[in-house]
Amino acid sequence: MNLSTALLHALKAHGARELFGLPGDFVLPFFQQAEQSAALPLYTLSHEPGVGFAADAAARYGGGLGVAVVTYGAGALNMVNAVAASYAEKVPLVVISGAPGALERSNGFLLHHQTRSLDSQLAIFREITCDQVVLDNAADAPALIARALGNCLAQSRPVYIELPRDMAAAPCGEVRMVAPRKPDPDAVRACAAEVLRRLGRAYRPLLLVGIEIRRYGIEHKVAQLARLLRVPVATTIMGRGLLAGEDAPLLGTYLGVAGDPAVTRAVEEADALLMLGVLLSDTNFGVSARKIDMRGSIQALDGQVVLGHHVYPDIPLEALLDAMLEDGVSMALQAPEPQRVRYPRELRADGEPVAPMDIARAVNDALAAKGAMPVVSDIGDCFFTALDIDGGGGLLAPGYYATMGYGVPAGLGLQASSGKRPLILAGDGAFQMTGWELGNCQRYGWDPVVIVFNNCGWEMLRAFQPEAKYNDLSDWKFADMAAALGGDGYRVNTRAQLRQALDKALATRGRFQLIEAMLPRGAQSDTLARFVAGVKRLQAAA
Ligand SMILES: Cc1ncc(Cc2c([C@H](C)O)sc(CCOP(=O)(O)OP(=O)(O)O)c2C)c(N)n1
Ligand SMILES: [Mg+2]
Image 1 (cartoon, rainbow, N blue to C red):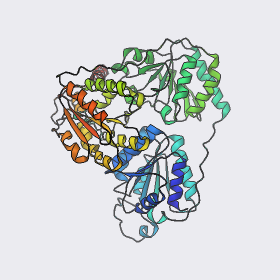
Image 2: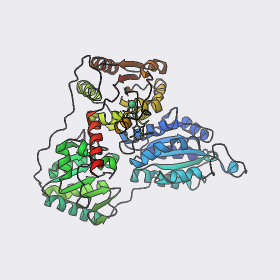
Image 3: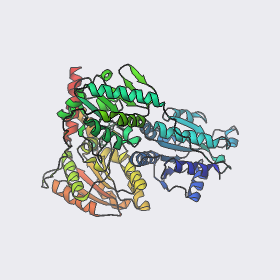
Image 4: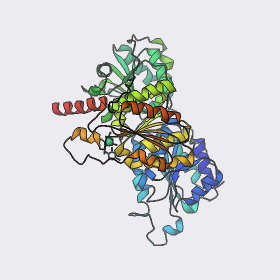
């Protein structure tokens, strides 16, 4: 076994299902080993941001590890934004970067792809990963790999592995998985008992769930706890789509002033708000009608639990849930029968122009008729529209870090990793960034259905600065380019054309389907309109 094959087998043992990458001379030896060993399928994309987004989506959707393999300098630094997004949104992504070998490091020349110093890249990745290892010594490599991959899963954050090219074929021992640290059972029980007491004393308890319950694969336990305690559940905007497949008393998504008033009231008036895996971010709470009493709430995040001024430092989320499920049986809180989440349906397929909400209706009608699909959304008004789309098949979007360019490559990563056909939503601005990755579908037989919200502009920005001219984009006629990239394109102006195009696209397999929905300039989804109005109202009141 050599260092590359030891690393590949360790990745697989930790839950990686494939590699995404873009080679360069510093990482060619590893690519060669990866292709020869066939330990994991290897997919290449056209630009490193897409490689990072695809690997991120594979981990988000399927659990386990996402793996992005790039060359040193120009490759790895090109992927910094995607890795930063994975860090912010707690995605277990493994970055493997090739690097100069020992001899070339000491020959006195400045090396190609080098920036300030040969260690600058490692310094940059220290900021956006939870662990970093440099595999420049075969004897230490197995333990370093085990530590990094163990931390990636335990913290659900990206890690950085630097692999000098002269080490790829070095003889190496096997990597032994590091068993996750066990928390102190007494501390877990004490914490669970205090949380249950808080909930038991409350008149209006509520569970608010966020991304960690997906990352640690515990949605079913959260649903079980909510049913057991009869406490309603709401998701944060980032947690949209969580618990979709579970039998849980789900109220809906909390969007503050921009959301369903009943859900907003339930969250903001809860006298015991148990937040499970919720990031305290502006996107999750920035449009709160009234300040949520964070001191009165209970936050279980990042492996610790905070109740008022009490902090339990080492309580993994799943351990807390197991203890609450064990002890919670004695409680039977009287919670209101929650409403089931309803999605807009029944598109009027007529000659009227298409608005964002028509896309939500058309998609919900199609999903109801043809079955759930994973939905992957970029950032723009398509993201706000996605909040009105049935996320039963899963909803992926960088709702907190909010980088554009995520949609198409993430959808490709999801299909490569899960085999499921995704529905991808992207604005014209975001599609201009990474939509061209669709050209890789024909090599791998991927066939996503893509809906481009073409309003010929950066509409989300225009919502806040209507007078600005710089938000205007020209009409790129994306549908005309689909055939050249190996897919089918449909340009739709009316709701009837949208319905026809979506039916045809869903019925066509083996080629990507690109529906370019022409939206009148200024047309906004209901949620974006409420979001903008809410933010303006809160800013005026500040
Ligand atoms: C990589 C990147 N660059 C810039 C931004 C800022 C930004 C937005 C967020 C606020 O940061 S929303 C937006 C416009 C999006 O345009 P488009 O994709 O056409 O969608 P729509 O027209 O529906 O808005 C930009 C430029 C971003 N989020 N990500
Ligand atoms: Mg746009």
